[in-house]
Image (cartoon, rainbow, N blue to C red; front, side, top):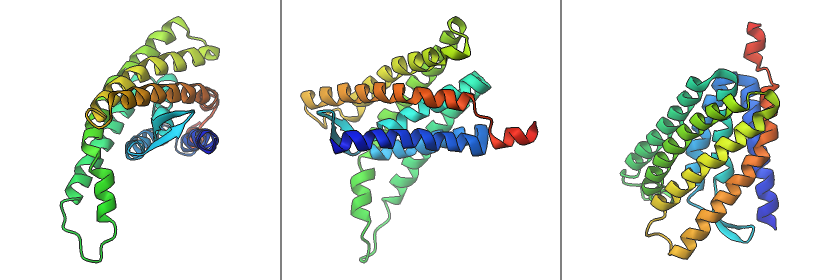
Length: 230
């Protein structure tokens, strides 16, 4: 049960850190979080773990936090800022892939101890990154569209949980399907792929529900820089 309990604590810690970034840096903090979390999640996803009796990839809670960040941006600042964050996350991932692939081309010194580890991690990144970039753009833009549409039907502040969970759960289903299909094509047998797909979406569902209270906290938060303006 270690992975389950540690995973819960890890997910909650991610949301607390997101809130702190927003509190101290405002809208800029959310943009930065999307960039950081997108890159780190795509590094973590190279590791598989056993959790709730299923094989799953790491990085789900970090990646799910980017949807919360864009939903907060959409809720408090509008659709354009949410879309800007989506493109920022995409650009950050693309730069990471290009820079690290170039870095792997350098011939290591005899004293080097890191190159083989970097090759193990970032050697998998191109296929994973391509899958992630396609899934990221499709699902995040869908999330912004659905969130905006749901807000027209459920506009009250108390109904944020409907907007947040409704948009995230639908968009992350698309994200999981695209990502697992491209990233793990030919890597795992079909039964393992199906297990990863199901477990990944279940974990994203759980994380999305856990994220809801933090969304309300963000709505009630006034960043320090906005206090100074007021």
